[in-house]
Length: 182
Image (cartoon, rainbow, N blue to C red; front, side):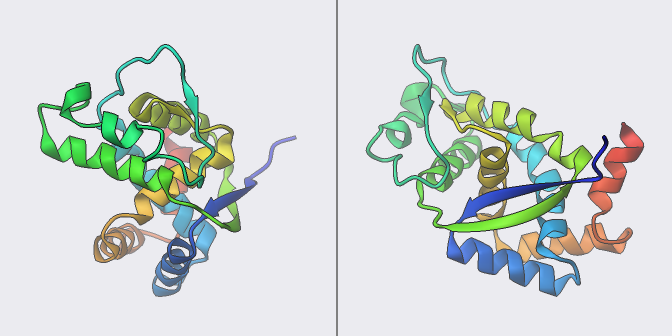
């Protein structure tokens, strides 16, 4: 049985939920459409982040936990660990991702994603693990991490990116492009 959409529950912070709601309202879409477009927008930026040095033990961090600073990952992600030491901008992206993963995410939000977008989540989770050295768990945790990383960007740039995407077509255009590319 093929499903056109997949339902996932993500954990995000209240401010992130408010920003997602504001972006959705501003673009005449629902939060699920904006989350799908945001996921498609953030995948390339996750791809350019440097890979975390291989560690003998992979730490597991549930998305939204208050861990991070106490686990030493924030301190280990600088030039001393070899992560992106050639580019300060890359280091900033890794640090931003680590900070996002370390902050609590007390709000549960149910989203509906087009199946082709949901199919990207295992790859997104693997990439986040490679970048941070933290296994984040199931597809919903990968979506939470990627969505939170995207929402941590400049709100005006997020809105401008969504506006550009929606000028080219209807809401959810990123998911439609995936169908064509597949």
